[in-house]
Image (cartoon, rainbow, N blue to C red; front, side, top):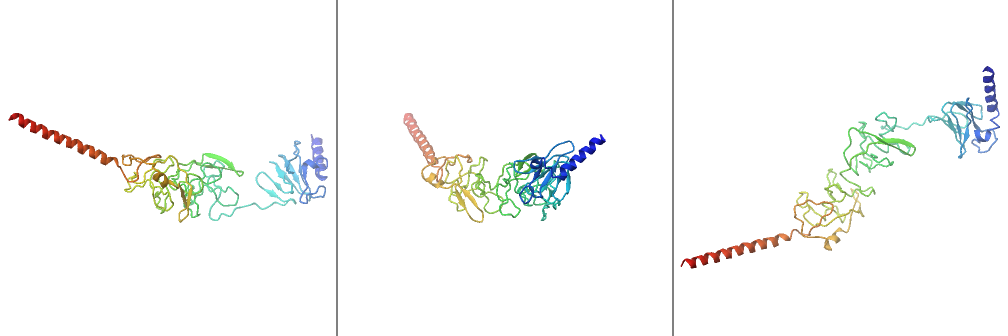
Length: 359
């Protein structure tokens, strides 16, 4: 055994000393100058159990667990968990430690906190779920905790596509502007996915109720709050079908002109038309940027209406109605008047006939 050990060590030394000339093409990278056999090659050494380094298609070399990396100046580093030698001669260990082509350890990349910690693992499962930096710029992009309570408040990614879709802060003031909804308490990041090489988790939230962006263009178009009081002012969806029912602004002037609720009782009173779909096609710029569905007045003027505006039913996603009110009421009143008139005439005739018979 002692002889075998000495033989193995001598063999490893021999391989290291001559840059592994036998397997140099597979074990070494050409180094910073990009030319072979110029003395700046960085090589991987086999593990004690005989595992060899492996050249990858991109020109890098994967060093096996228990192997070593040898630099041109003779410096060696152990790689108990393996390593990658990049084509330029730099080396990366699995824990992120990096070495330059001369074997010098690079300083660890640390993100400046700027008052906010990134990639926080709130539930201890080893995966970040709060203040997630998805693009590696040391700034929180998703699931941002604005008040330091460990719960995300803005730019929440509920479907884990790497983009915020809930309580979106569009102006960077720390307050949600689009797809506003309640915060789940406690935050339960139970769904995980890998985006841009980062595995993170999030909590699938409820549906937003205010400033809803139904077509994903970044502008709210349903339940739009124009004055910042957290109440919908235009394009109000009552039944949650993503089709506005009341106070629709079709011309972009910030005032309702379709299905107007004049007495604020939750029912349309004026300019009532049937809506079976919602396709916002008109962008409106102002203090609040939103979009809406145009040309609805033309539907009203073309007769997409009937005489059923005051039937007592709240509007749903598809309702028909009239421009000015219920024209059926006068008709019913005339019928009632005629019936009463007939009864009165009949009674007079009957009384007169009974008097004549008594004579």
